[in-house]
Image (tube, rainbow, N blue to C red; front, side):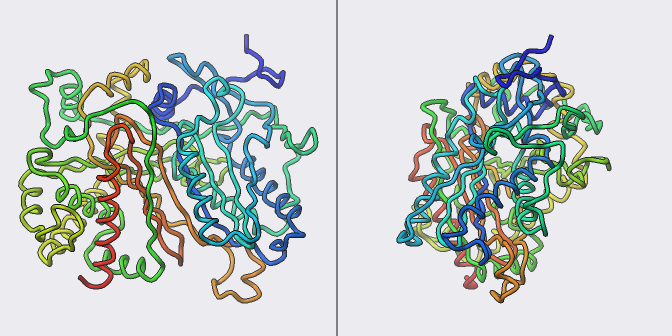
Length: 520
């Protein structure tokens, strides 16, 4: 018999969690991963920018959020039996929007620096929040939006539990939110299946038909693995440690599980500099993701000696949505599914390559603070192009020898136990790059004319992950807005990595990007 939720309605089981969803939930429950944040800055149109229009503004925002909720079922569901070996998604009868939408108003006299500091403090704090608490996973979805308003600027911070959806899903939410704000009459349109109770705070959800959740990739595709790939994975997992040691693994940064705290840093690349960097990437047949991996390689090589780290591994996050079959779904197209479709691509940087990079470092760079030599700039672009080629190959053969496909064969019955065991092993990746690409800026031409002032637009974005205890030492998270600049974020576990190292790597990357822009 189905149990009842705290709203008094029977909880209908929709389906079991998929491989990726169960993995993410397992990490959340044992405190190896907490939150993910995507924050976007919106320019409020003139008609809603005055202090007197605050009520209208809040109503417009709420209705746009509700429209997004109605489009994406993963925003409507809870988790039943979260701590069991077979957790399931369940249908909820309603959402209390006060749990999911919060406003923070800054004083009118607050300057730009005050605004930035408040937003950054909230961003970092929410990365490490438990939301909701594990005891409430059955009662409410794991996402919330915090809105900071100052003048005609509105920062919308979306924070979520990764078992609900990945970062590309969060990107879709922001893009749909912007579209809803700009839609003619969008603030008045609400499906007849949805309604408000209790002073507009409680959104009732339709009982029938039940929400159609995105289907896990392993159910939709075969994801074949060959024997060599499977045997290698099994050997690395179960073979004797002294025989399976890989010189490229991040033994220099042992896994430490507690006390849990994420260190997050970010820098911003302005519009002109980003345009120059993108032109250089095209010239050298690479992408921002390829360049980020190469910059990290040079920085890590400069800050760690050959004894500590003779070689490296990194990982690039890859989106599986391109492999979803066509389907008639509420969210329109499969590439706009809000769910978990992320996988990863591993990169190896062998001892000869790393030694060659170290030999080209300018005097002083080994202690941080130096520019790149001309030879090392050439090496940087060569490695960026190689990295991009690997990514293209993976995208073209994404379904073959994939990590999710591997777990179809190596069935994990208890992710919490598996991840606890992983935390006792050697760390594999020195860094990961998870780049969700370009956010569309929305309505208007960007000229600032009268038509632009009637439209909502996005001017900036920032992306960050909480520390993933057994994963990479540092997680890089770039994101850009069309026609604007790019934010580059980085996260690491405070208990495992000295912040001076993480800050040094970020300083290297920011400085070297500036050097490339200047033609150095």
